[in-house]
Amino acid sequence: MKIASEQIDVNCPESDIYNRLLSLDNKHILELGCGSAEITRNIATAGANRKITALEVDDIAHEKNVQITDLPNVTFALSGAQNIPLQDETADVVFMFKSLHHVPLELMDASMHEIRRVLKPGGLVYISEPIFAGEFNEVLRLFHDEKKVREAAFDTIIKAVDDNLFSLVEETFFNSPMQFENFSAFENKIIKATHSDHKLDDNLYQQVKQRFEQHLGDDGAHFMMPIRVDLLQK
Image (cartoon, rainbow, N blue to C red; front, side, top):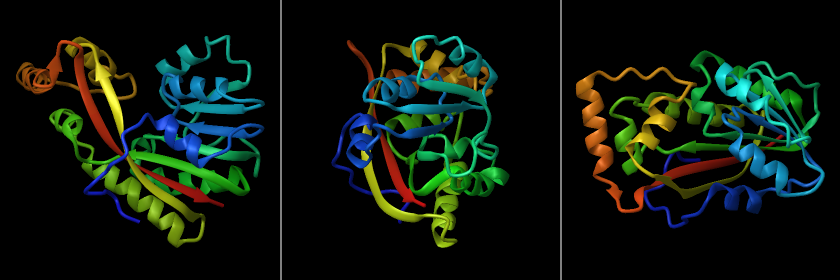
């Protein structure tokens, strides 16, 4: 296992990756850190007989999610990965889309044990984590440097494999396309994300804006975020 790859040749939306690696029809799917439920919706509506439990720790995002009325196969709950409100061995697949590094450091190991508890024997865990590299990261790290927490997340995965909680099925790397119409869109989605409390003074705000606008063209700003996926099995 390695935390990053120097050369990544695959450029695609993340759905291409998890649909290649996993069969999701007729499965009970657990998503940890569902955010605004965009991926949740894609998974819930793309196949047949998919039951999804989607957890989020951010109160604001969760309150919006529970207002969703057109996803009858999704149950939203306010909870973290360290305390999953499911019975033992009830989930077929567990997803963490760029969320493990948001788990408090002291709770990462407990979260992996909790995932193992709720996962059926032979069940799969799909963990995607952004790699600390790339042009988008160079903008983000000006006000939110995630190097240490991303390294901690990777170390947690390695420990879970070394401790035989899970076996590694596959590790893959890809570039995920990101697009923002303008700086205002970036500010609303990233800087003002309700799951974080980013405080930028005027000087730092202008630095971030200037760095972002270096990538701004007639059709917005485009980035490729390098991502590592670890597929584990109980």
